[in-house]
Length: 435
Image (cartoon, rainbow, N blue to C red; front, side, top):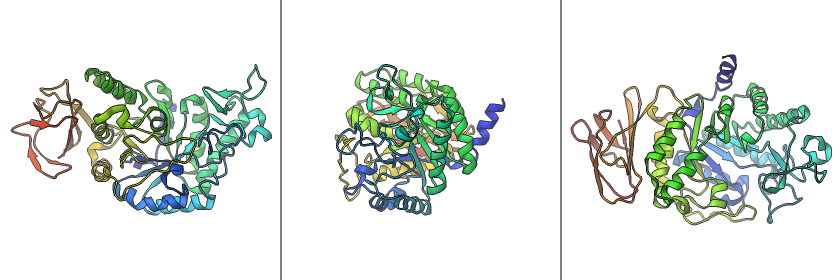
């Protein structure tokens, strides 16, 4: 009981996390220059689109030893308290954070605690910070990735050094939190040790790259986690034409976790886009209703650089320069603008709020239609998604939870569901109504 109370206290001071949306910034590919200063020009557009939190992929320098490609991996750090000169200077980053804060953004930094690159400064100054390979006698290579080596969290000095490095970015750059890479690959007791020390400097937002269904104990530390199982299950649903009931069953498992932590819902990120395909390669036309789901289900939406264009068949290179080609106005800008502003302002869409109830609604096409109502007091949001290729599908919502007047979030058209609840929806279509 004491541990739970302590964890709750650690999470105070970041109430904005319940209404936020996260935008992952691939700085290298965002502009031709690939710098902090060049990215700053996108802030007004992202603000207008409704983005609340900017997540920057690692900004630390990249090790040269065993570097992959021409520029290397963001996740092969060579110094935890320095800036990659590819992106600019520390002063440039500080100015970017200051500008983002002035515009109302929060800024979180990608933190890679599990491993470093081979050429990290600690390999010389503190080789005892690393795990050793008993066969080769040298540093232990991280699983499946030969450009990185694993740290030794059995060493108290390493733990202190890591916490000090994280504090550096809070005190020097005024960031608002961390996205912790491969969080479940690092011992849970380290995060339990690190978070209260860092939150004592400033209450922070903590997003962990793990799925809480697989690592439930990590929810005692992190504010939000990944929904990896949902991402994979929805791809299998589309590609293998699995029954919609399987998605319901998985969401019930997530619901049992409760609201002490949240899920981040997404259809793409840097790993998925580069290695497994764009959201359109994985989901085809299902990508759009899944995006609506990500913005309206219990939790917080996570969007990757370029999804608003969208990057339909463009996989961004990971180790080499491959700048995004931005149109004058991304095609999905207004689509995300409506959804993200609604998520940020409507009380029924607050993530991780025990006052919000989500009802899955019964329909006459439950094998193809996913309809749900989210309610906070008298405020409600209705979401209707066609998860099938059935065109001009006609159906009724038969659930008594839906009643009264609503307005279409996209068109503004009024509709009263007190009398009739009949719909016609295009293939992979969506409706969002607001009470």
